[in-house]
Image 1: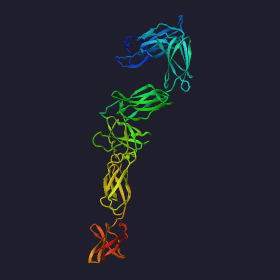
Image 2 (image 1 turned 120 degrees about the vertical axis):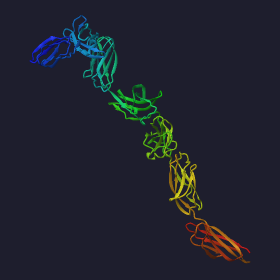
Image 3 (image 1 turned 90 degrees about the horizontal axis):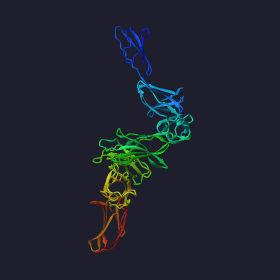
Image 4 (image 1 turned 180 degrees about the vertical axis):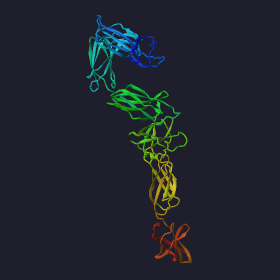
Length: 611
């Protein structure tokens, strides 16, 4: 190693070897100095420093040493081979490819940081003849000669699935020797040379393509492998969302995603790839599959809990000419709530949704909040994602009805199957017989439901006329007999029937017109002795519940008499007394024309007056 020190004038003041790093200059004048260090197997150094008067200056210079190796390539007769390519490898990494000079020589020099164990061998053209060696700091290792023996040549053309050439790289794994490498030309043709006879494994690789591995047996001068297809590869990514974030105390599961190939509409073989899905921010992390060639697949997200696996998500995927990002799906931690959904007449739903609101498994119900939902399939089935160990209230149809808790669906535990989800059933109140006699105080109300629904049982029917409550009765087996608080007056009454509903049957109301017939009169005829042997007094009376308008007319043997109605207790009575009626047979006839509440009366009676 040579150290040159240049003084303030630019002249070289000292040039000498300093292998031990001792003092390299003395009696130096003040000013700027430069130090240049050079020599074999080191990186040149050029540094500047300043020397003050009457001081001792020290300058440490760092020198990077190199290590090296040299060798020669000869043929079988010992003649040097010029232009041979020698590859130096460390493990699977080719650190340098050297070319021999006209004398067949090659030399490798590298910084000391790259010292270690190497293998020198032919990179191409010639059969392998590997030499293992170690490079030592500060020395150049001389290797034994590499003997060049001609080898076989394998050629192939690499194209993609569309027939376009692929600029692939190919490596050949050879028994007992470093791998051989070659790159394809622009037309996709690749050429491997210097292969020995025997078995070899070829691997074609390029970023964005699926590697192609081909086992061959090398014989003679080699062969053309024809056209090899290297298919594009893509990625599949996705993720899942739990019905709710996990909480302390939840029984957590482990999650993984699996990729399966689909052939003829069915899963073929085992999982091609598996991706772990650790928890992150209270939910399983996303998944990713790489190096997927075009085709049909299924992605399954599997939950493992207490040693048992459950497929939480199973989605089809088609990979064609680009990567696929699946939408984030909501999955159930633990088995979901499953069943069939129906409408309020118990007909299966063909669309719509079933909603679930998380509620305490015991105690009172909180005010409903937004929850999870599941679409209803065309066969009416649904699957609600839930969290293991929690409870839910289920609702179907309009979310505005979330405050209507349906019996049997108020608390459904996560994982329950075979659930019949429906809103409260529709009901239709109606009366039996729209026209009835005056004085009939019982109104029979039928609370009808769909023919598929069991008859209503429970709840009350209230009969109202305007704001006046006429009566109330409990429904038994679909019927309520409402007794009015008083008899309704004759005529038409527009009444409203209000059914309050239950946890199973929805409330409803309907309006009917009830017609009560006019009140009928009670007729009474008597004859009493008036003190004369041949004459008596005949009394004729009509009694009715309402005060009729007009008068009653009575005819005895053609003689007409009139009488007004007057109140007697809770009824109204009209009485006619006809005196001086002879003994014998007489015709007595009573007539009242009627009004809007009292029925028409025309009564004839035969009366015999006796002594």
